[in-house]
Image (cartoon, rainbow, N blue to C red; front, side):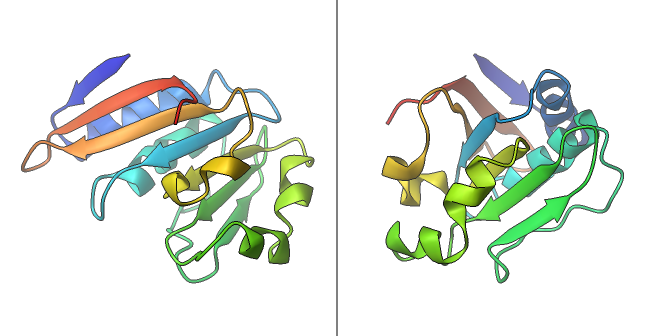
Length: 139
């Protein structure tokens, strides 16, 4: 599914719409360059999960946890060098905790993304416009 958003609010809104549909154990793998809008989309995803906390990018902490109707585990793989490093942060444990895992820079760890994950590619079209490509996981 392709969606064009014209402002950050619309990108957040589309994330919220997806978040309302997610069940425990869902994985959302986000792809896109710096400043593409991945964190904005995850802010909406969190709202759709009933999370009211401020959502920030976990670039330096690798993962932020947020309680809600379904807990959200927000990963940022930008600083991860390889999939072996995932085990140091308890990757397998997060996958089994019945929350929603939202993963920024998922293209850095393709072998670790479970089958059935939802992918969200975000591309800047200039200004605040974005193209969102939402689909089942495919490399």
